[in-house]
Length: 112
Image (cartoon, rainbow, N blue to C red; front, side):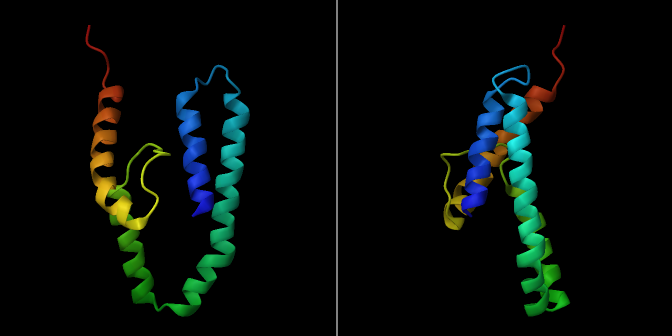
């Protein structure tokens, strides 16, 4: 969780910068290294434990639960948001809705 909290903070920093300066490239590279190291640790340490302790049906249910959670998750880093599972469960869908509206507005071409 600490790694994920740190990644959220780094992602929020990146969103506040412009790609043209402010050390964006080095911060992005550092973020990418941290994400890849985290993913590698999950694959090497966590996944083997789950595969050893869970049957195929349990793994499939967990996969579906993750997919549902991702649909309700915010699309932007919120470093001051809740960090507990309950806090994310209560606040996450509302923040996600705001994020998705914001994303849609920014992706819409300007009218002339």
